Image 1 (spheres, rainbow, N blue to C red):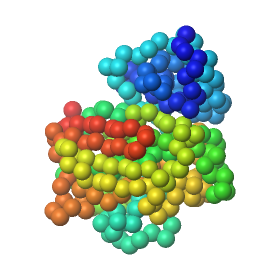
Image 2 (cartoon, helix red, strand yellow):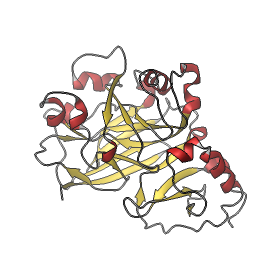
Image 3 (cartoon, rainbow, N blue to C red):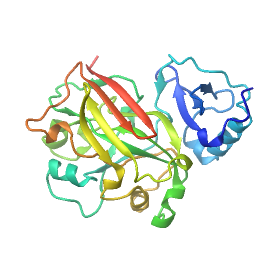
Length: 294
């Protein structure tokens, strides 16, 4: 058993192991990664719905009985199991709305990203066949903690389990030049990486006070603050819950600041061999290699 003095506020959850066979774990305040699979099946919809975060916090406060330390070289998967829905918000930062074009939205622009795009924080980003305009978008991800339907804005943050780093990879030619909705440009395999951990909501005093950034091959491309969102996390949870029921473990990707490849002159889309780093203050970083489809 580990030291019982480990604080509950240090609770950050991870999943580790081979792709598709990840096990649940936690990161303690001292940086150690602890296997929680002996106590919890997975960090999925049932886990959140049945009060799993509270049980996990209690297990940590008791010293993580039965939990072994995880080899730091083991792959990290996305910190929660594949969600039932990934809801994305487009053009939610003023400068990005300008670089994207088409006007400033008066209400949140919503679109869906296929959950089959779910990916880990250090997994390769796969260039789809016939792709010519692969782009990056660092975003704050919000993970829903309980069933939310017609939620009042004042109560919206009570429905949030936690936050993580997300990259909304986009194939702009598929998105903007092939007709129909944006989904086809957003949903290729590997286009929805999240991690490295889920930071529980009690650790984030203000989701509108976080710096977020993206680098490509070491060059800073995006550098923004969540306080610049046109529509806040609180507003988004309430607004989205008017149009669909949000289930525990669902993910809301809250939009990206300016600096995407499409907005550069000339555009500088991702190529095989590029490295993409996305980070959010206090939440961690994703680091991924761009590769051709296997």
